Image (cartoon, rainbow, N blue to C red; front, side, top):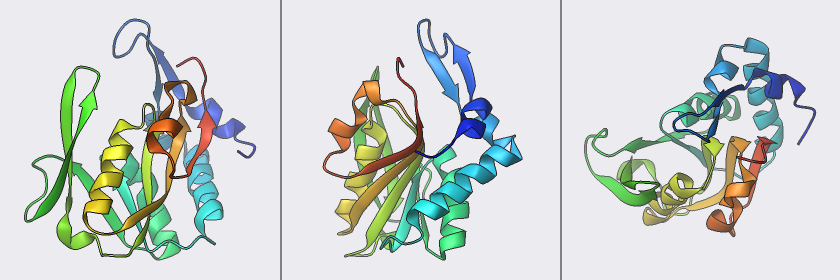
Length: 177
């Protein structure tokens, strides 16, 4: 991680959300701070401009906001991973566990090309469950997630174990989540 003081200062902390005892890291405040948002975009371009990536896949919805400028700057296709029922046509679908139940995400089958090397992006990586499901969607299409990126990582929730052996990069990590 580089000098990311501007990013750390821009991230709003919301205690007891969505329930008592949880400290929520609200990344929307990064989007209202042009210097912090520029830092994130510039750092992701720096990190990934020399890597062998064929496409970028992003998880709904805040992952889109960080993946889109990176895809544009690197001249790569952007693949959107959406919540169940949001995409028309043929999709790959994967269910994953939430704290209280399950959820499903989907991706257009036509957007994944066999053999592609894909960077998978979300805004925040907590347990890694959503990104693991996203990785499975990519694999259903015969492509490979070569790396996973999140602006924020919460390492105490052991996301690297769930996402292994895929390398995971974050710009900032918070302990004690």
